[in-house]
Length: 427
Image 1 (cartoon, rainbow, N blue to C red):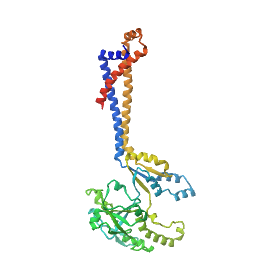
Image 2 (image 1 turned 30 degrees about the vertical axis):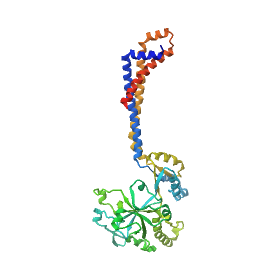
Image 3 (image 1 turned 180 degrees about the horizontal axis):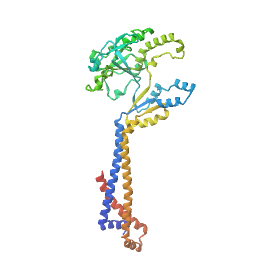
Image 4 (image 1 turned 135 degrees about the horizontal axis):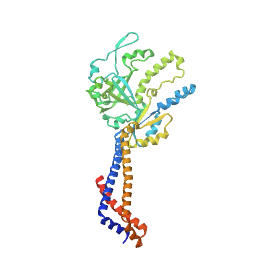
């Protein structure tokens, strides 16, 4: 009779001992599976947390690192450092955009401007019913305050994250293309409510004022005319803004019209730069003539100088790619630039899950160690009662290795029964 057959007979003959051991393995297996299940659940919850977060990565200047570096310098070195202040470059943004995981990028600038030949969508809130108020200038002149009523939002690329997220949905016409962005074409998209309120259609033009009529007194001395402050745009698209406002909130009661999603106009970045360039150039020439000694090192304005790039936000194809995207491009970053994957928020949300995972691992290890101790103790006590059997087996020529193998097979058979039952109940 081989050791395997003897092991099976011993398990069936000592039924009470086998049942007790099977129950022990069953309980141990359940505790281990529960611990592993909690750990797996916490890891899955972290994955779902990341998946629920937007798959966005921001690329911007690391201001704190630069200021710490500059503060450690002195004299001319410090002046030179501030003169070469690090900034986001479009070529760097385009390099990151070449990554196939990038869906689109926002390099957005927002300006509060004034409607001219059309009316913005009213809010009918407390602010509007109380009127705009007045402003008193240094010379004692009092005029009615004119508040901006438009949000002019521009991008350097022919797509926006809001379009991919379905926050903005084009209902008529189209979005501007890359050629229109590069040339700074005077085109725009307006909301469907703004179009309906003014009976505007694709192909119509609207005029926006860069400066309010009351502020012209500060610009007239430099030769700026009423014509210079007008920006005429062709409507190439009408879109719906899905952002909703709570009309019962205190914030809504005192909101300005330019804060309303219905009064947001989308345009290429250089459209604003080209429009404001005329004003900026006249101011530059006037100031240079008045104070020539202060303008020896001042650069001549360009349309690009009024479209400052300070941050780029990339939308990736999958939130789970965010960390890998950051890791892949971290070594390519220029000095004092950083990629932020919003990890602080993720770590804050994931911290309780990490704690749960830690405790579940501790439970699994405690159970495993206790299981080894209990099984060793039970086996040792059992061997004491089987001295006669061991002696008989040795006397008939059975090797020590086969006897040990028999005892292991007995344990494995019982363990398989206990663990199999625990898998069913534990799962």
